[in-house]
Structure formats: structure tokens, C-alpha cells
Length: 107
Image 1: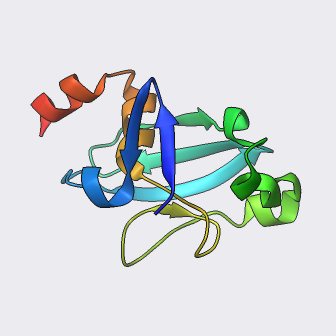
Image 2 (image 1 turned 90 degrees about the vertical axis):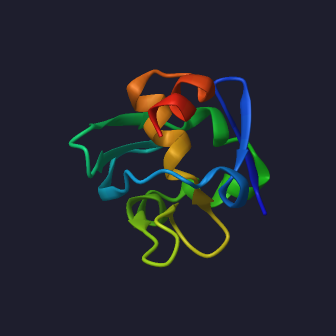
């Protein structure tokens, strides 16, 4: 399972995904930036450029591929294909500007 580092905390889809707030829409805004909305009406842009140089994310350099972002219907992950999925909890925390500890208190 891929591990992603957001805001100095490490998360995996398997061990953090517990929130009741779910993503409702996602779209690519520009290369390496996505906009995500959630069921609690939180929404915002997330800059993912810091991940672009990692080998798993090399496919993102193709704008057509990056623009095909979607919400996985089984996991609610923000995905591009079966190999590239981001934990929606991490993206939610990034948009809200909250730490993992604060996020846990919210749930």
C-alpha cells in the first residue's frame, strides 16, 4: 500500500481511513493541483506538486492522465488509476489546515 507524507505525518489508506466525511467531487485545476469537495461542504484546492518527482507519480506529467482524477467508488480515495490513490482524509486535513491530532478530535 502506498504511503504518502502530508504535513509531517505519514498516512496510509488502510490505517487512517475512518472519517464519516466523504469526498463528493474532484477535478483537476491545473497540472499537480486538484479541487476537492466533501460532504460537510468543505472544499478547496490541493497542490500535489511536491509528490510529482516521486516515481509512482510520474504518470501525472501527462496532463490528460492527471485530468482524469476521480473518486474511487469502493474506497472513496482520490484516484487516477489502481496504482495512484490518495487518502481523502489527508486531503481534507490539508484543505482544513488541521493536524492529525485535531482531525482525530473532529471524528
